[in-house]
Image 1 (cartoon, rainbow, N blue to C red):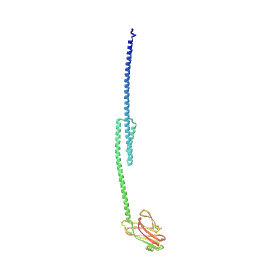
Image 2 (cartoon, rainbow, N blue to C red):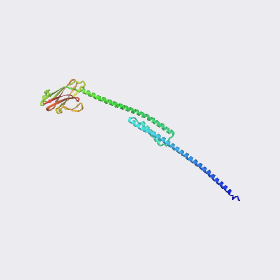
Image 3 (cartoon, rainbow, N blue to C red):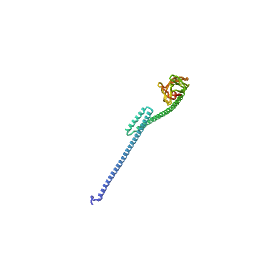
Image 4 (cartoon, helix red, strand yellow):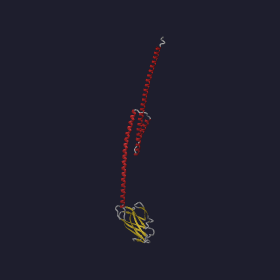
Length: 311
């Protein structure tokens, strides 16, 4: 058998060739497997880096949002304080500057995507400074409000006391006024005929009665004020009508500040010396039969009265 035709030798070469191929494939597979593991590790590390970056960004955003909310809350507090200052009549210029500064800080944060540690620390210090200032001003305003309320309560109390005193003064004035009311004593009613003759009869004849004369004396009164005083005479018929002297009658105000008709009036200088006062009433016509009342008023009060009859 020749060398070329040896089957065993040929098979051994094939086996060696296949072994080499398998070895190369194993090396290639191992190398590829390592590369895959390395790629997976790079991808994992890359993912962790991205996640860490995203977490940092989220943390930065949270810090910015937190600082923005704190600054906005401070701004609202300062705006509320400005309204309180208005109600108390205080200046709000300093508060407006604080609000403007807070607006600038809020606007600056809105354009930021991240904060450094030093920037975040500086903002915290600034916010703490604003909070301290705000607390001090709130305490000041609270004191002012308490003082205002206390003064208002005192004012209301004083007004109440003043009202009570005013009412008591009015009552006292009324008592003094009533005490000072004059009194007409010894009232005398005379009939006067056309010839001027006087008669003191209780019953007058209509055809002879031309005028009515009324005399009285003022009683002493230590409370009465001296000076000029006006006295009003009212002659009232049986129909309750006030007779008026065409030349001297009119209207006066009584003690209740109501208008009342008078027949005639006279004026004297009162000296509190038991002065005599006299009226002469001219009706200007005949008196019909009936009973007539006579009333005398001074300073709004009725100080005397009487009556006469005409037949």
